[in-house]
Image (cartoon, rainbow, N blue to C red; front, side, top):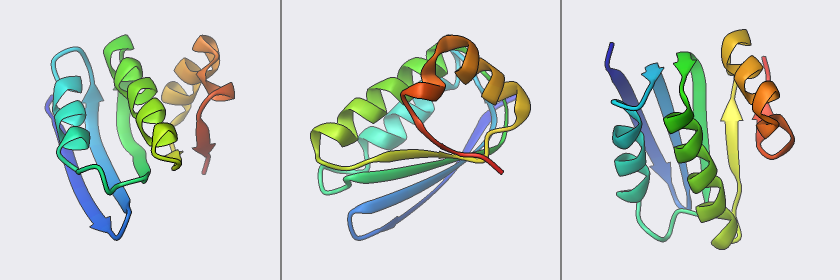
Length: 103
C-alpha cells in the first residue's frame, strides 16, 4: 500500500495527515514532503491516525523532523497513532522523546 499525504500550512505551522504504511519504500515520500515545506515552517503536526504500520525508516524520518523543528525553535507533535504504532514508539523509547497526542 502506498502512503497518502494531505498537507496543510498556515503561517509557520504545517499539518500532515498520513494514511497507509510508513515503510522503507514510502518514508522518502514523507521526508520529501517535509523538506519541501520551507524554512519558515517551525511547527509540524503529523496526524498518524490512518497509519497502520511504521518501520524503522519511518522512525528515522520522524526523528530527523523532530530535530529539524527543534533547530527552528518549534515543535513536532504526533497525533492519534493507533495501538500498534504506539507500541513501536514505546518499544523504541521514542514515546519519551516525541510529543504524542493520544486519542
